Amino acid sequence: MSPDSLTRGSARSAAEVNEQIRALWMRAGGTLSAQERAEYELLVVEWAAAIRSHVIEAA
Image (cartoon, rainbow, N blue to C red; front, top):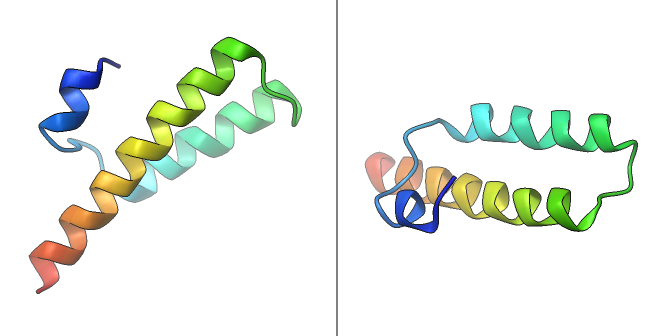
């Protein structure tokens, strides 16, 4: 996932991204490596964008 894709908004729903975050934590066994931590941070940013998009649509 590139930072450019994040600036255009999330193509996935917050629920989809949240499921990927949960799967990452399960695979990692609760302790993230440096690479997993970077992936996690990108996923959290994508999740937040999806949440914001949903809130804006609801308004």
